[in-house]
Length: 128
Picture (tube, rainbow, N blue to C red):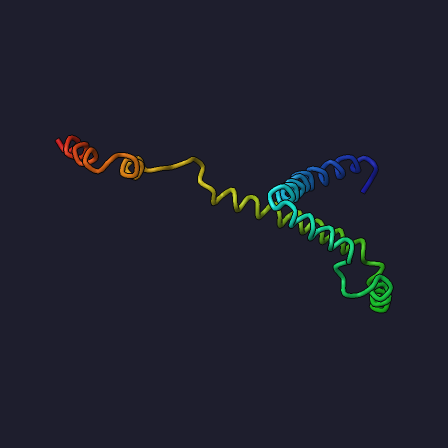
């Protein structure tokens, strides 16, 4: 990679990551807003207590013994990009199964609103 192609590579990377980052942030904001206090309390308790079974020292020793401590930035980047990609796929899937417009059947609406004696006369008039 030369200096001339570096701006294009950065622009391509930003174009690749921009939409999934915005999507993931919006999903977190929607979850934070809709789930309310239960979501906030679970996030704050996970941050305070720590979600790992191992302490920081134990996990660091384990990673060093397998030689994975040097690969952690690459693994973290891979996991973040994977989470962004999966969230984008999920949002597109939900958008695809959602109906494009609101549909209703007026006959079901008539049956539920109009009294049955008037509904019978309306049905008789429509048969003529």
